Length: 360
Image 1 (spheres, rainbow, N blue to C red):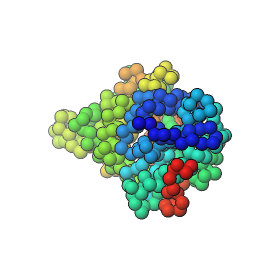
Image 2: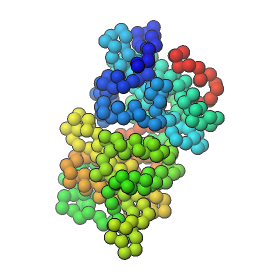
Image 3: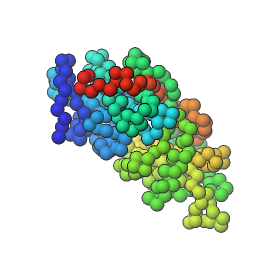
Image 4: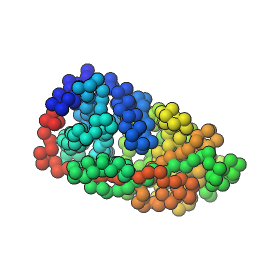
């Protein structure tokens, strides 16, 4: 049942997002992308997968504004996504946006006030007594949005680069160019495709390789299962590197060492006419670094993507990554396309933030 709307004197009705709102939500996101140009194309299929995400509480962790004075369309949304750890603090992710035609009417302020209040009980249920900060990733080119977050007390804390490579370019590095020689796996290493039987190994590499990375927490088995069941997951472009056992030919595998995980958003192809392989994860266990494993494994996946007809590949990377990932990707041929900044707001629990969100 759709929750009853909360009326407001400004002509907007506010309530949590439900399954019945997904088409309107997709329309709203398309209108935002048309103006903000962040290359973010999200359809109903992708939004549907949020509904059973283990870290999103839709009744309490989402909200949307509907234009009561117009045709009732969704014109703004907010969503909170919890993390799996609170060490040293719980970084609670907040996303949201306002339709371009409804900006500068106070909706952005309402969304950020809602996030601050709604996050407290959700946080306390998971990590009672632990510190919490809200985190929002904002494209640096969206000056008005950055200023809005800053007015609400958020501070710029970390920068991330969006990078891409044109797989149809005539000047691809030799290892990626048609007819070029694929790099051999480093000595003692074998590359194998993802399978259900190797899912636990992939999760292990993901979690262990990102220990110490800013803002990263371990992915739970529930969240991992949700991810690899997603319609955007591409097992054919997800590969693991394993230690080759003595005398092994790839059938007998040793320890997992690295992972490259691929995704494809078909709505991107419908919107742009081009296929993009999104490299959602690249991880190497600390003990296996310095052997060129990630470079060779990623190059291998990119060669497969080019041969399969992908026009480009994209990924996001922490600009201050302790592993020097930006330099690694640049050597392969990726170029920076845009930058986002993570903005943090420490939330003091019990400081008037836990009143019901109906009070907004």
